[in-house]
Image (tube, rainbow, N blue to C red; front, side, top):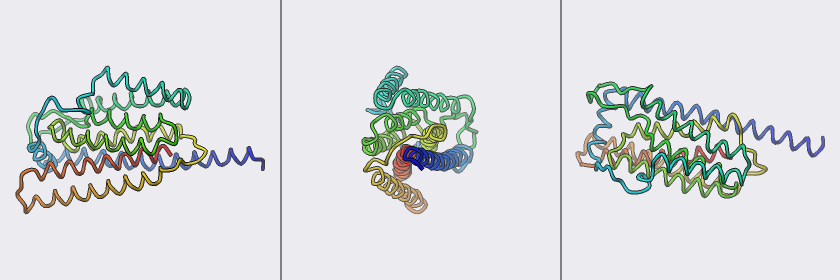
Length: 271
């Protein structure tokens, strides 16, 4: 077999493995996202628990950056700039991916929240549906687009920084009373699912895995699981410890942990 034929076989095997990983991540993100809606929005105990989190928030309509940077013009400009950079670095196909795919994800989030999903009055009467969070969706899609835009050797660093950014936004959305935990988690899963589907359709081609990606994946999954477990422990402690702020602490730890796991999923999809 010639060298060219071997290369073609290896590329085909790589694309097949990439699609398999993306399919698994797509299924997991869909399951977690749907579960967060069922438990947090469609159940009385979930609504009551999230009301406790919301009740401990410091409500503000003027939060600091990065949350206050989101607007329709700013989002459009940022994704167009990412598309331009992706075009220079990877070519037109990637440029289309990092602009059109996030746009689809953002529109899907708004459609689900405003037209398709409902919030039954099981605990709070006439409460509007806020699932999934549009702001969280935008930041997850932004981080994913950045990972797909930068040169291969920079993906690990971007994924690590992007996960931190998602964690900050998730904390802000809860701390300033803009969203409930299920809204944030559902938006993260929607963003991951959007790029998982893109990867199934058009896997990324790399000659070799850039250095640092494995280490970043290990760090993100370790930090994510640790924070999620800590969130569950803090939430459970509220049954016998009556201390103000525990519920929002649990929600924040869980949301930041979910951000780290979402970052791990995105870097896995890109490699």
